Image (cartoon, rainbow, N blue to C red; front, top):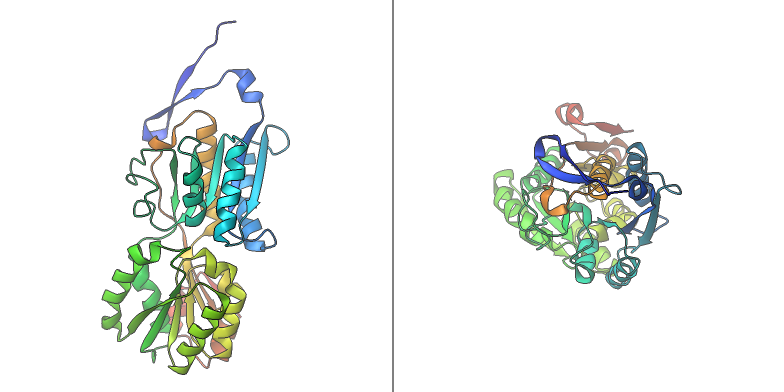
Length: 329
């Protein structure tokens, strides 16, 4: 029988893809997942579940026509490289890159296998794509933040703790290079208008986290934990130290506030992974990553932990409470 190929228009993006013959549609497709967190991390498992469930809604069912190969780097630089090589060696149809270190490691191994990323702060500055509108290579996906969010974190922290004068910007430059390129300049420029001096606090170990937060507490300062997979993996230590040294802190991921942090403001994480599944579906059906524009977050969440506020002796203003998407009591 002669092979037939059909061109299909996908929405308003005018991206064409091939509908494969029936025998190709029925074969098992393989997706690698390079996750930044530890396998035991409930937050990481929730991200995988959101991605897998959305794929199932699109007709890709694990164990039937889909195989998911998971690797959990647990924030380790060497593990990202090792697992990226392992996944590429499996010759998957595409790979999901969870955060900046995952994508960087994957791109060292392949320039041909499609990569869909999530939670990447600055894909252009990191060299992953040529532009947001036209990625141009084998990579596309969903950015985590934009530069304007940096001043927003300071503003919210100042609203919650009006007496703050000094704020440390906590991050690991190895796992979050986008902080330097995307956020520091905008935060430092906005800080004086809020009556704040913002100072980078670069950390690369648990001991460095302890020292940094201890120093912040001694200066009666506050903490803004930057978007960084290293910090997410060390969130228990960070929230514990912030509480111990009475440091008001804002985080970029809801999981921090849920586990004792004062405030969090960031994107809706499960929503991003559901959207990533839609790109994976389109690529499995023939679309090219180079033609799928990088998308920004569309849903954001402000979470306030009142129990932590009370422990810090803070009274959260009613205006700030009214803006919260979730209040933990």
